Length: 200
Image (cartoon, rainbow, N blue to C red):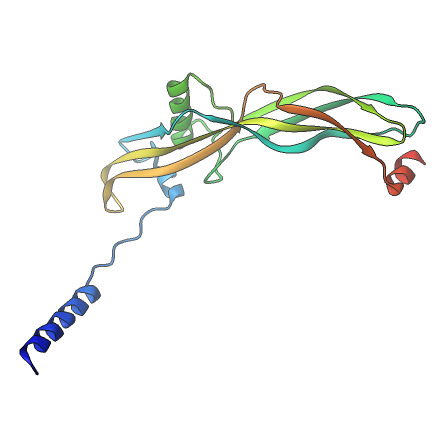
């Protein structure tokens, strides 16, 4: 074998041996496992929000009952409605408990923005809808919401999955306290089935 080819062959064998012998690293903790360790095995656990809460409106949906105007003249109906909107987050866990990662999150939001995080909010009112003769009317709402993105920084006294420090990304969405959102009165013609069911 020529000298140059022998050198190349030897290098290829060395490279193959290096790839095969690479150590296998231990699996890291899941995001939920890290959250459960916040102030429950850590020296420090801090949530760092990335920017102020982002305001937006949720999906449009009906609130309250539908009014069916079976008369021959336009009618004004007052629809009484109330709904409770809860929070959600990237791990599907509750932020309502006053311990661990949830308490750290809420304290961080209040400290950073002088703003209380709402895990649940109930809002309702009496809304009027003018319904033409032979039609139906209802109320739609899109709820005022806010979203926060950030990360938890956790320091452990001993190595946890081979590291003293871990970071965990976290998103959370919640209703804005006492915000009415966008409320709209809607009307439409009744179908034949609706007329038969509600107007006799």
